[in-house]
Length: 280
Image (cartoon, rainbow, N blue to C red; front, side, top):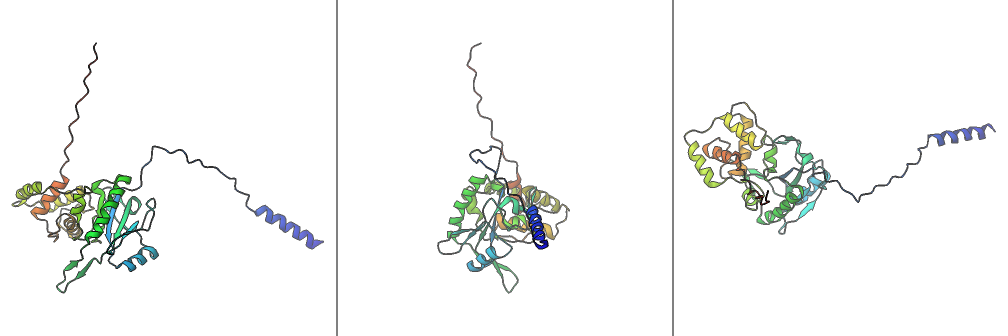
């Protein structure tokens, strides 16, 4: 009898501890709010420094990821690895303009490319991207820009957002092709020539370069000294806009390109106002 009573008490206790069934809820998704926007403000381009198979392994099995992987096959294609609504782990410690930790606000695109090798004399020799890869990349970028309203100045390389530790996509990435496709800003050659002539005999000092690089969007020291960190930022800038020479030297041509890119954009004149033809 005691055993039966004990069993009954245990059963009652267990029943009391059981979780009550959840009340079902109903969600109607037929309405949407006008007041919303995409989380995506930036697009960041990378090279993988690996062949295709290793790139796939690294981006699917390790603690690094990207939204898209562009192959280097004869007919390149994209692998979609992370949904655009989610953050991929591709940017790391990063900043651009007033934004930091760009994983949360960007789409990352990895392009299969071996990166660079170091020659016997200590120089970096970068590998080119194929025309076929860029032919595939441009339509995706246009689609992303249209859907997420990404501004031209926010299509970036990893070296733009992390110039102290990253070099990709490197000085052989054809940024000018992206400019020709209407995707990014590009300095007008005639304006650059005019500015370069002005700077030839009076190259700006370190403080000027730091101010202009920061105005463009880079995280750069404000020391007034051309230190290693400032050198690295200028190299990142040159590998994008002056790929023939990215030695990090603050020269007249680099100053001219910076001056043109950071110049105030002309404001469009207001259109004609409607004429009031109503009689008093």
